[in-house]
Length: 443
Image 1 (cartoon, rainbow, N blue to C red):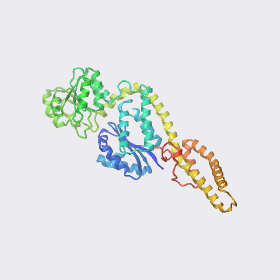
Image 2: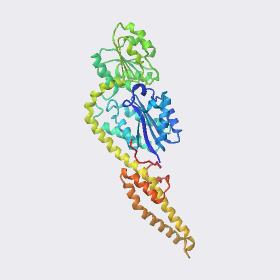
Image 3: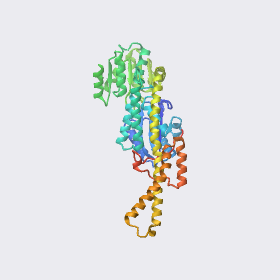
Image 4: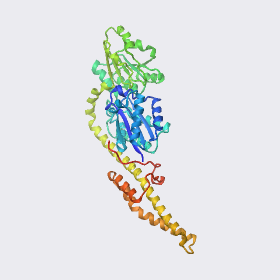
């Protein structure tokens, strides 16, 4: 029987130094999924990566074996010992795993509660898994429901109003540190969603930004046109570091973009003017050693948490409403999950009844005298109808059993009727192919 697992590390459990080593940028996520599917205990897999989390959603036949395999794989990818990773990881099973993803997609588990970017990140993670054919009945249902829940939360609450992104909080920090930003020279390194959010927040403060992008030059130009800024090549970066007041970096590069040695070479040209560096990337774009240079102030995503804490009070009421929506949606998922748990036993019970009927009819086949084919068919139908009617009531009661008692009743029923443990579920009994699910496991 299978189980849904969510395993990961986030800003709540792991320091930035660990998270950036666990990062699954483009290409690496596909490799991890392929390796996971090679494990006999893993049947479905989706990998989710954002600047604040790396998570794997799996359907497994053996949770203990699967957890061990995931830990070893992530430790190998990160280049650290599994024992160093244990304390940074969390694991959720079945409905707890679903609840966690629903909260992630709704922005409730984000550093900035209500952030909007994470919805798109969850969607892209699911689309990537679909392209890799690594999903199945359970993960398909899970991710579609999580995305629908996230949309409902943002539609029915005001949780995403105001400063609802890491980018907007970064701009707010810059304003607190430097005052009016309108006359500041701001350099944005990157052209992704975070860079767009940063430019939008700066534009609201009357700031014209300079974009530096390598792979996504066309997008950088589009952003510059939209927000009244300019674009530069990476070759111009050293010169602009000498002129900028603020640098906000958010690329998807696996390597640092601004090194301490390179920055040190332009410090003299700045003639003592302070430089504010804000690194929103994971892995980091800016060498942490830059903070040691004279006149340089460096802040990364983890440094923004104190700033974020102030916005949580404003959103607390909306967050409570959002949590209520998540719980409503989880009840629907739990009901569906419970149906999957019951289906194999119901199918096995019906198969057992059919076997008993077939056996009795076969044993008495030679005792009928002058029985026509038509009458034989009637006897066969009658016998199957009796078996079906006898099993109807226990089947109905089994399906209606509450989740906390269902597993005990299933086990007792299997023992009483001597049912095979892995009897297949009928495709007629559910909207999805057989996907056995074990009772919820507390984590």
